[in-house]
Length: 620
Image 1 (cartoon, rainbow, N blue to C red):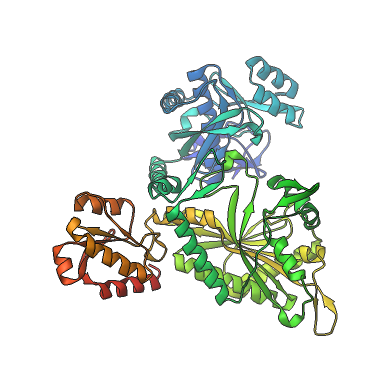
Image 2: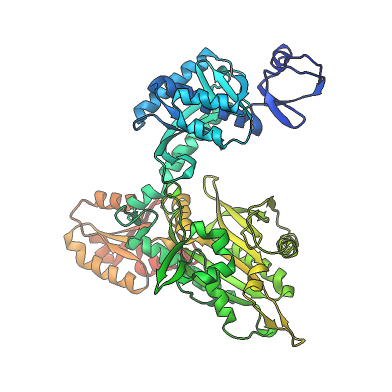
């Protein structure tokens, strides 16, 4: 709307009773609502309910939290405090560990600050003057941030007695923040530098309405209940031991069985689709990583070692081993495409601050494959991978979304190669009628990619499968095939994973199913529970019979009541409890209980086996 020169936008909003407005946009730039126009302007008002409005609200919440921390601790030093999805955080040093009790005090103080309705006031000053201001406050983090700013004049915001370095914009006053909650405290390194002292990061949530906040807090409770780290301990699947090292997973028998079942499923699915199994070494000469571009573009994520005076890189990806398989002999156009598959163990140097259970680790296994094909085969091969992804996501019951990630700044290859590769991915998606979004600048350094983001049972999105189109590595490694005209031609290389990291996918499965796995991948499918010791012989015979038929069975031999034994099985999320007492021994049957369904009655063994086989075949 057109607004006249000299108008204060905040007064205009109040006068015209415009609801939920917290900022404005002029000529594409967002400004504070408490601004006065110096000429007639087209103004777009920003609602707190919009994406931009929520970001402003949450950024302001971080400032209010920092003010509350200053009141509670007195001597706090502050680093950064941005808005994030659903909330905000602030990194700080308060001289000691922040406890849950401290969070309650900080939140209580925030409510006082909100009630005081302090105005957010913007000022600008020379950078050197701002540096002096924060030096006097003893806040070395703000001083360092200021010294990194390549501007002569900087902006600060003040609400009440708290001043912070910030570009803005902010809500007009603290009273605009009504619905928020402090959530947790975590460690964080300043600028992500592990050589610096660790700061403390307070996370909070903020929303425009109480209903949205309550809904999000309920969602967080569900996330907490499903946390794969907690369930991993409860179900005895895996552990992470500081003595071994962060980001390194120790798989216990049940977790290792879950891995085996998923990996075996993958092997069979790949064989059905014409893939050949290969295996590359764990370390390769550093010269190869330089030739591929990994050394220049990815080495901060790699580990290196020296053997006999020569440098080797521990592989973060499997592509170079597969390239060597292709190069091992001359190839004819008739034998393409070649589809090489490996469950390849890779290592990546992840910073300790981002490690998270199975979701972010330093050693993991990829269901990695590389397809070497002729250019005229490329479209069909990409579509084949998309269909493979669809089949697997259907089996696990996941919906998903697709993104094409385009050329990043840090990349190799020519503009023509990138255009060819990007168009190949777009054409394949459009040929199949699949919807997709464009994610600018997030491709691999050697080629664009299709990213598959699955949605779990509570609506979270996870990056798993990816399809990357690559014209550059075949050129760098001089890969060729003899075409039908007798001339050497260069193949195209498709890098792809279906599940991605096996560790990460297992974490997603644990949280999606809440540890209650379908029968076909349950590490233990059933537990036999004898009513008393006199039923043990029959229980043992039943155990051996079901085990011989290929089922994953346990026998409960603890001297406890039947009720307790059943509760043990329920707590350990075992799909079936098979109870045997006098009646079952006499009739050569078993009393069957299905987790979450309860008592299914007595069955003879053949009927039970038939039921299980059908459930497994249906992958339920």
